[in-house]
Image (cartoon, rainbow, N blue to C red):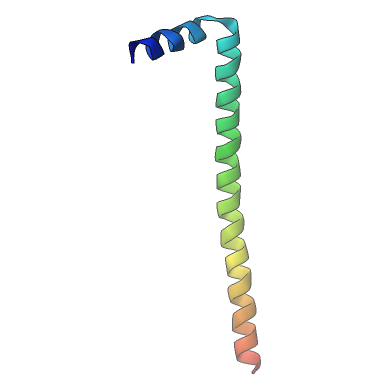
Amino acid sequence: MMEHKHLLLAVLREDDGQDLIEYALLAGLIALASIASIKVLATKIGNAFSNVGSQLTSAT
């Protein structure tokens, strides 16, 4: 466990480690934005299908 801590600290001290962390943060933000947009789209698509289903039921 201590070896992992030293490795993590070494990565954080290096410039390459900083780049890695920046890319990880960027990937995390992109993932959060994707999840949020998928949730919004899922709600809108669900509502659209419900409306179509209601119209089909009332038409028959």
